[in-house]
Image 1: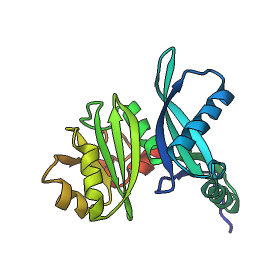
Image 2: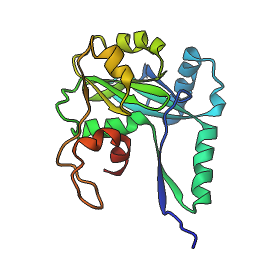
Image 3: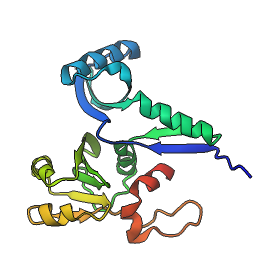
Length: 217
């Protein structure tokens, strides 16, 4: 019997996902704001902007200025997600990137012993994602390859922070190249969070499933 899924939630962030911060005039008209965002993107990078879908969120604002986090996702990636959903007879309900999920955990105050400012490092199979947090908001998110050459970039990103957590794969890079110079701890989420279906406590294993947990809470 063919099985179908009502909804699929996607989590995407790799070295082709571009995340930049932009400061611009506080413009209410969304079409005009998007034009400014596109103009600013062209100042940062030489990509063909027509190949990307643009998402943005307001980090902070005042009467005159907007501080935006702009996320560029390749349209071919979105097309692939839509095709997978179509093959499975489902709807692509949400398209997340790593920082969306972490921002949800931060906004809900679910990360243990986090004091509104610090660094969250995701260890993946082939790369790292470095997330810089200020005032409980993710200001920067960078994807770096899992190589020794990345050490200087990672160290430079985190040197001014006291609170540094990692999650995901158990990565020797963290222990061998960062732990001597920085106090880096495994990320843990609130003990009161329960898995939706079986309502079991997540325990220490939560470090391996942060993205999955963030998508279902």
